[in-house]
Length: 82
Image: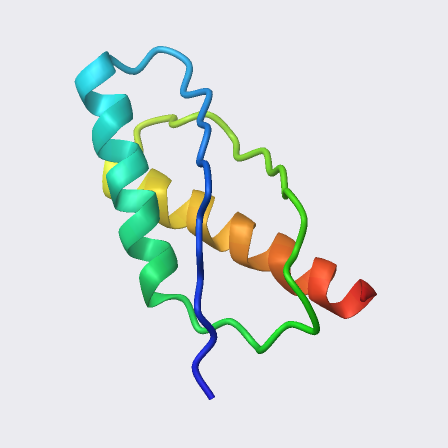
């Protein structure tokens, strides 16, 4: 069974990224979440909040993968709690 991911709002605080980089990061995070294999959740998760360490030489693609993995982990925990 494939779980559908619906993002009502994605807010990123991206530190020293330019506006163009921040927009691209949001796009890449959305694409990475689309590739995530999430288990079926009992119900819709509430809002999740994650913190990912600073960029520190990582590419935007690598940073997006880290953000998406953190969101996926938070959703798994939220789903396990319901």
